[in-house]
Length: 150
Image (cartoon, rainbow, N blue to C red; front, side):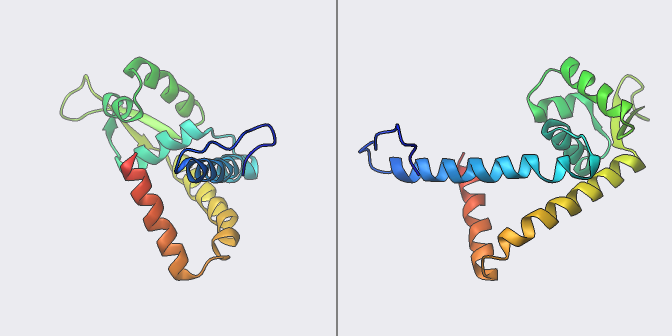
């Protein structure tokens, strides 16, 4: 969909790219404003990404997490300070090297993850149910291919 003040660019694929970007933006906006803001949970998208990584890489170090998120370790430490204040993560010393701090979810952090994921599933299900099971699989496959290509 073009905005009223835009002129259609005649480059091949430009319209498809614009339509894809617009649809993706609308979906992303809905996801950001949906589950994470529901139920009184004030978790930001960046905090959510950190929590998800820590859940999948339990015991990761600040350096590993910083590298994954593409930020400096000092910046990640500040982000973790906020998550610790919310009692969603805890930093502990490594048993192999006392200089290394490992990050893990707290029980409260796990509960938050579960709650927000249920809310997200509830908000996405009606939209996905407009597609057949085969269309849903095709959509996921296509989006995965686009994500890998980026």
